[in-house]
Amino acid sequence: MKLTLTAALLAGSALATAATACETTLRSSDTHPEGYPTVLAVQEMGKLLEERTGGRLCVEVFHSAQLGEEKDTIEQTQFGVIDMNRVSMGPFNNIIEETQVVSLPYIFRSVEHMHTVMDGPIGEEILAAFGDHDLVGLAFYDGGSRSFYNSEKPITSMADLEGMKFRVMQSDIFVDMVSALGANATPLPYGEVYSSIQTGVIDGAENNWPSYESSGHFEVAKYYTLDQHLIVPEVLVMSKMAWDKLSPEDQEAVRQAAKDSVPVMRKLWEEREAASEQKVRDAGVEIVTDIDKTPFIEAMVPVYEKHVTSDKLKDLVERIQATE
Ligand code: GTR
Image: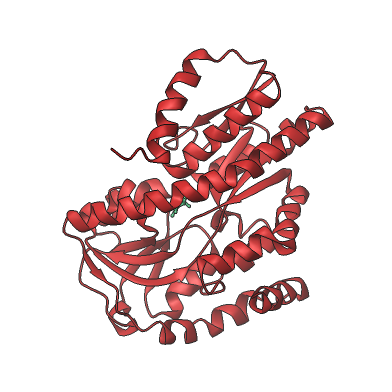
């Protein structure tokens, strides 16, 4: 039997939890369930940190939105109630200007393009921007590409979206993105999406394979169209208040452990994307892969015009587009 990295880490984390007695335990929030790549990656980061600080610092991940929905947990992290948080960049858009560029539809040509940008100076600049908002940006994780799914019909062109209602993450960019495609956007917390589709409040939502699968949304919205309108990186942040309590050596250990968890996360992500896709295919989801993205991309011009107005954002967009 082939042991996946996911299975290996899951087994390891069960043992580690039982053996832990730490001086300081950093509480970290995640909306996703146990075993999801982001949760495993932060647990792995915690393991590295514990080893390297001789048990002085540990991390406990509160998964499955135990500490609340993303938008609220971000505030709590700024206030120092939560020490660490793994979140999408989307919910930061209305707070941190720089995060908007990576949330623009079709800004990245591929996941590889996103990696090149986020691993380089532009990524460092965006991480540094968290510093002005009571947060410390530690590392970027993968979030694949996001596509539309719904409970009504297969979407095979932009025209099919006309008048439909889609949940988006709580960011003005995503509301305008959906409007520009001729549909209606409802910003909602992630945890409300399943029941909102079920009761017909919305027709569908948009997300990557692992979230579409793990949230169970595929059970109530069985049409998925690979238009891949967003490649939004995820981010691991720390509360500035928790950060300031650490010695410079421990701060460095936290930064390094976060960076070292990135390749682990990428491997986990690849595994989970494939497994999630297989699971929803097996469940009979109807997937539209053959879709012309050109009209979708062209429809985004007004979204860029409305949101990319400051010199800072214009410059970032140009540099991202010029990155090979
Ligand atoms: C997921 C992401 C979460 C959350 C969620 C959402 O892909 O990993 O952090 O942002 O999407 O749509 O709310």
